[in-house]
Image (tube, rainbow, N blue to C red; front, side, top):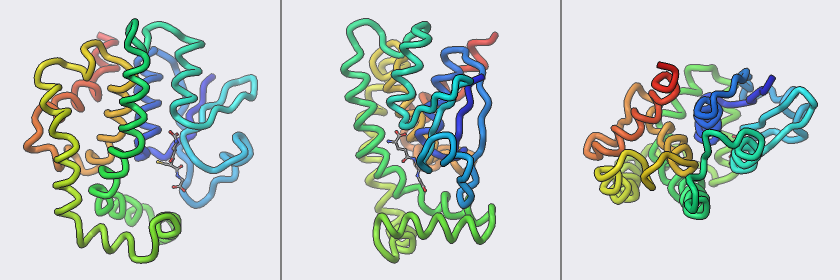
Length: 219
Ligand SMILES: N[C@@H](CCC(=O)N[C@@H](CS)C(=O)NCC(=O)O)C(=O)O
């Protein structure tokens, strides 16, 4: 049995869930409590997600390493259409870092609301971790700058929207970069819809296409 330790709203976890579904692999998703991570630390020796574990006790950390290991163990259907591997990896690394950072900033109010609903300990711990990384007052600053953050996100998404107007997936056939983009976009879908993508119809259609994909494969 494959187990995925996740925060449900993590973009890196969303990427791995979709890849597991794409490859038709059964897995158990274990939702890690944001505050209490003892089991995660025991199985993986660290406290970030995603982590994938196997029955033989192996634990994989980091979404790219997990994706590459899954590709090696279960090559079909492939994440890397022939000759396109390099571009898929390069694009996905950009999505996971620069693009992800910008989308995260735009999503801060929704993420804050999500942790508030889960309780005061969750939101306090989330705030602590984020402010340790970005500095005191970061959350309030992101709320104040929300509209500018959404504009910046739209700016980075616009060329992808243009490209996705010509083909269903970024490089023609579906591949690793599509799952990475889907994962990062999932931050923006924390409300019930892709809030900032109203004027990016192809991004929205792409997100819904990948979102529906596993059920489409079953029919
Ligand atoms: N490069 C890693 C990044 C993983 C990552 O940043 N995970 C976040 C969740 S989105 C995490 O666990 N952060 C720890 C925390 O928020 O305390 C990957 O691709 O898996």
